[in-house]
Image (cartoon, rainbow, N blue to C red; front, side, top):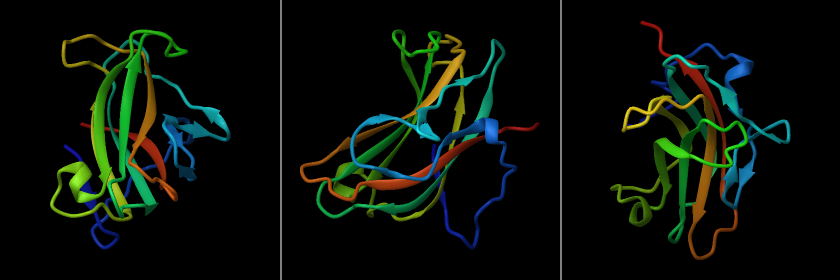
Length: 152
């Protein structure tokens, strides 16, 4: 389950550039997240990978029926050409589109994720994918995202 934290209660995490999954930038159409202009795919390896996806939203259009679904997807093909599974997702946008009691706002969201699917299938490669829906999306959503590993 995703958690929203305001700046006053925001947790701090170690940032590792290798785990950066999306540069800040406007998203107004569905697509894979990019870092420095290229789609970012993380090779999580063969072992279990457990982390939080830290999503820092700087602006979001939530006026009519906008819905932005941030998904962590897994695949065993590095090009995500087949066998794609959604491992975790976060719905942001208007209350009517997300089913939440209020519109989403800028801030930090945290999404727990692992590279093991609900059916027990391990996925070596991970990416962030944003699905955009709504009748008149104009300004979209602007966010950055990175993984921070769970340390036990």
